[in-house]
Amino acid sequence: MYTGSIDTLIKAIKKKNNPTVAGLDPKLDFIPEYYVNEAFERHGRTLKGAAEAIWQFNKRLIDELYDVVPAVKPQSAYYEMYGFEGVRVLEQTISYAKERGLYVIADVKRNDIGTTADAYARAYIGETDLGNGINVKAFDADSATVNAYLGSDGIKPFLSKDKSIFVLVKTSNPSSGELQDKILEDGTVYEHIAGLVKEWGIDYIGKNKYSNVGAVVGATYPKQLETLREMMPNTYFLVPGYGAQGGTAKDVAKAFNKDGLGAIINASRSIMCAYQKDKCAPEDFAKAARAEAIRMRDEIVSYIK
Image 1: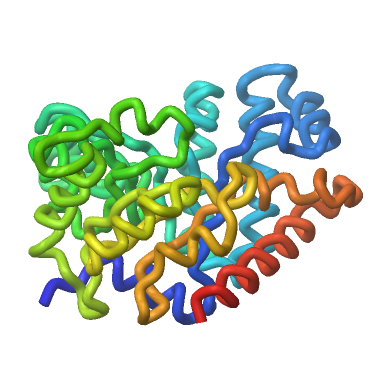
Image 2: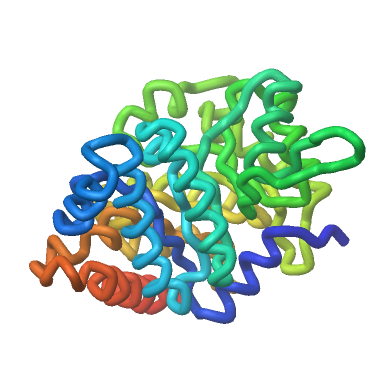
């Protein structure tokens, strides 16, 4: 029996009785103004100043959320837009979250031809060879999101790292149907990808009967979510689209199996920006995020019991 990263995630979900993940997708607009101003005073209105504000914001969020949520999911684009300083903060955020005992899903959606896919896999969930037998971990996330468009050549390198991956199957964005809903001989494009995900994951089933090869399935398409759950009983779902994008607890309940497992639900803006919605004092942003994460947990758990 294969034992791997997905079992670590499931253990954390069970321990905290919480099948949710907090997305860490920071923008300066999301960060209390006093944090941003302090960073710019120290470093100037520069990329370094912006990155420092993001780091302080993330650190406070992690400190308030680590005992509530089992996982966090930093989206790399929100760090890359600040250049190398932002990428530095992405690495810091991953490292600090792991220090706090959190499972980290690097939302990078990478893929390419085989050798380049291997480089991506090494960067985010593997090790980099420095020569003379020395291998180091660059970002060292526990999991990564992956694009399936290049087929198995771009997937196999990620499977060799003893970490989990979540392959894009049916995404939450409004235009996903332009490609994903196209009809093929054996069903839609997203159903065909689902079949490939099942095939890729057969040899990576862990002790909880779930594969290390998971699927990204959006909460904004509940009927498709239900269909895919039936098609993929041993596949763990990463479900974006809850909260700010319009997905509800009733919608995401369709992502779970009868064992109460099978999915982890993501919320980003609704947690990070809870203080803005609740009109809290800016200095209480992390406590507002914690309260929203608890509310989300309780709501979703009430639907899957």
